[in-house]
Amino acid sequence: MNNIFVYCEIEDGQVADVSLELLTKGRKLANEINCKLEAAVIGHKLEGIEKQLFPFGVDILHLADEPRLAPYTTLPHCEVIVKLFEKIKPEVAIFGATSVGRDLAPRVASYLKCGLTADCTSLVFGDHKETKTGKEYKNLLYQIRPAFGGNIIATIINPDTRPQMATVREGVMKKEIYNEDHKGTIKKIKLDEVLRDELFPVQIVERHIEKQKVNIKSSQIIISGGYGVGSKENFDMLFELAEVLGGEVGGSRAAVDAGFVDHARQVGQTGVTVRPKLYIACGISGAVQHTAGMSESAKIIAINNDPKAPINQIADYSIIGNIEDIIPKMIKFYKKNTK
Amino acid sequence: MSFRIIVLAKQVPDTRNVGKDAMKADGTVNRGALPAIFNPEDLHALEQALRIKELRKDVEIILLTMGPPRAADIIREALYRGADKGYLITDRKFAGSDTLATSYVLSLAVKKLEPYHLVIAGRQAIDGDTAQVGPQVGEKLRLPQVTYCEEIQNISQKEITIKRRLERGVETVTSPIPTLITVHSSAASCRPRNARLLMQYKHARTVSELQEETKDYTEMLTNKPYLRIDEWGVADLDAKVEQLGISGSPTKVKKIENVVFAAKESVVLSSDNKDIDQLMKDLIESHVIG
Ligand SMILES: Cc1cc2nc3c(=O)[nH]c(=O)nc-3n(C[C@H](O)[C@H](O)[C@H](O)COP(=O)(O)OP(=O)(O)OC[C@H]3O[C@@H](n4cnc5c(N)ncnc54)[C@H](O)[C@@H]3O)c2cc1C
Image (cartoon, rainbow over all chains, first blue to last red; front, top):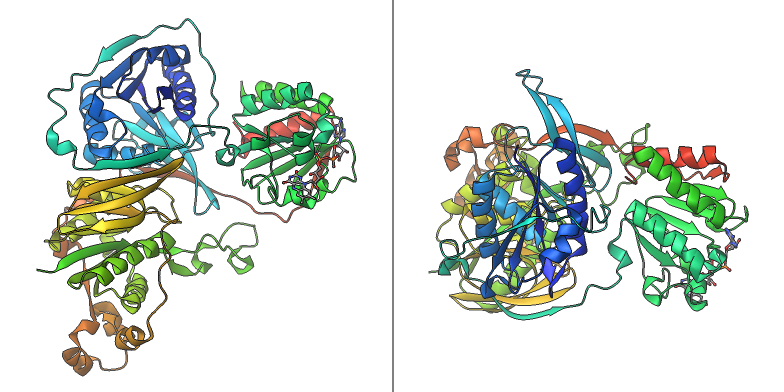
């Protein structure tokens, strides 16, 4: 059986969150069809990088370590990946839908003449029967994504080309350690034959990248807490729900002022504006300065013990009751229904 | 020898402004009712080309668009803003092409226009948001690529310097020419139509459009050959049919579900187990979570 592959991005020696999220997904997919999880890191000074990756269930880690491979440029990374794919022939290959992944994956797919689906929100295995030929396929990757400005949800498949390639945005999949003691094997990619000089036409002159800090803007699911959450300790419940759903935690100004949560997470007029596909407002009254920063969310759930709270007017679902009671139930029933 | 810039552009349904008339009774989008527009980031791409034309006198801008006959509209839009020429790449056999098949066709068209210096496209089109066609055309032409261009900072006959907009920052790179560039929406917006060019090109027509016209264009075209917009099909591009349309597209659409937009009517729930259980089921089912 051919394996599941994840391209891992690094910045300053840290594996990107999106890559860890994809490994979590990749591990689950691999278990489902009984194959291995392979990953590659391409860059420079990669000693010890496996310590960050093996706990996420990587079985085979391919490393390409050379000064000219960091920071990322398109052609050498593309060349390393296509040569690797020609050898290991993955069944599925997933890339982050990041500045890097969206630059690299299409180039790789074009070279290998493979299908590629951008910005998937869900990846599951399923069967398929070709209506014309009657040919049947087992365990094809269903690549599910919104299209048409979010007005339709499409399920895309690549019946006949391998790898089945997809990109996924940061924050869409959950990040979960598979097993702290999981050990994989490292395979060093031989670069002498791969890296020819003509792969380096593009030269980086200058680069300013901010450290990866809390950035709730890019998250598709935001669990936001207000003054009604009551304490810093109670916010832990929101962090737990966010982790389970693969989202981020936000807050109202009253919650930030009370010291329940960091300012970087404040949503609203004097905080960040967010448009996630799901916004859960917990113990937030719904002042205009707050709703200015979140009213364009695709779905809004309000949890408030006051049925008259203004937030209920813009919510798709209003749950009337206490945070302490409702959040643990959401976690419990989410887990039950996704088993 | 002139400095030739090829701009790739697409006509797209305006998915950003799905108004009431574009909604069907069941709450799904009536795609036919959406206005067709010049893909926004492709306009940013055109602007970058126009700026180079202001810097150097020898620049020739050619717009390529692949699509149905009515996509000729965006060629005219480009001519009104300062493009020199446009080609409509159209053929029934192109229908159903995914990004791989599309980039194959576009790369054949670009090759027909050799020698060129730059290929500039928008980062992505709003109907699919894939951002794949640019890099895939680059691969097929074996060109270097510089994606997410925010500003062209310097350009000579041999090299171009570009500032790129990344998720968490910016990067400045140099690339030899020829190269392929995709332009980000943070780059300068496209200038409006120019009144003189509008007068000059308003009668620009494709061959298929001329067949529909009641007026006789023969004399006008003889005097003003620049009003003729050429169309390229499978035969003109010498394209391999198995690499086109559905057969040339490795990705297949298995299922399309319309997202139903209902008026905002809040569902009020209690904290009972039953309510929360049902809510989580609904959210998972509608792909909001899970
Ligand atoms: C210039 C200016 C700029 C501002 N900018 C921002 C901004 O960017 N972002 C922002 O958020 N605010 C901003 N504000 C403040 C804003 O006006 C509100 O004061 C603030 O949003 C209120 O926060 P809250 O909803 O968390 O608190 P409250 O208004 O105190 O609401 C708490 C809510 O929790 C509910 N509750 C209490 N206990 C529970 C429980 N156990 N379970 C469930 N529900 C419970 C209550 O019923 C109530 O609805 C700004 C104000 C000004 C003047």
